[in-house]
Length: 376
Image (cartoon, rainbow, N blue to C red):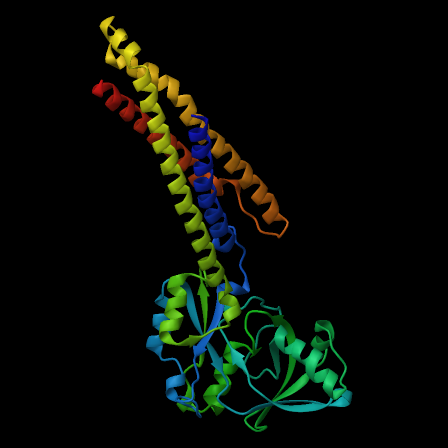
């Protein structure tokens, strides 16, 4: 009896914990309390191969149908285009930091930006253009270009105070530009959308008007259906942003393995428990027969046996449930040290599972006792 009780407790604990781990992992990855982050916004493009490599290949650009399809993909909340310059652009700066470089610009709808500075606006006739730069570009300058060329390294604050000149279409128009913010979401040099549209209309090459990159707002970048969509279409994306997909697959495999082992252990423990009940009843067959002769109703005998075995069965499930809830509390505290918030109510499906398991095993116990007594 003690061996059956211990095996049932261990099996139920493994089963509850496997469900709990998966619930906590899912909440950590994409729960309602998960804060907005760069991982929820993906910039995608079409994969460049030896076959489609070349200059202005139409197949490397997105059509309106492809943009609409991406917006309707499973898990995608919104899709937008990154508009690039279709005219030559250069930037120059005089003084001790004098430089000249060819440049590319992009723009996107403001709702896809992670920051919108107060200066982020442009009107026709305005000679000042605000610029948002990727933090990656600043890091490349500070830790690569500046060190190799002997230029000073710059902080975000100092580079904001350095105005430079943007030359449009070979100098046909010139604008004073200044960096007003930095972004981690899009690796590019961004200007306001209305400025980009105005310059493209006036100087742009109309044959390349379609976007080469899209930005998607997704519920969960690591969702299997979304990852499959990207792979099927041959779209490229920063693989670091999809790292959770590999972790998710590993966690699913581990949790599934533990769950299968738990079900096997629970099954063996329940069979052992039922076998013990049958042996106990068979040993007491003489006493039970005598009680029947004395006038005890079979229903009364079933209640006596049921009350005897239920505490063993229920205590195994309740002990496993209590240990599981304690582990959940420890897991919440451990995740909090890594700034990951998991509410206690994440475990409510486990509580439901504990109650459902207890009810099922009690019904199974009642059926087993009734069948054994009917054979006598």
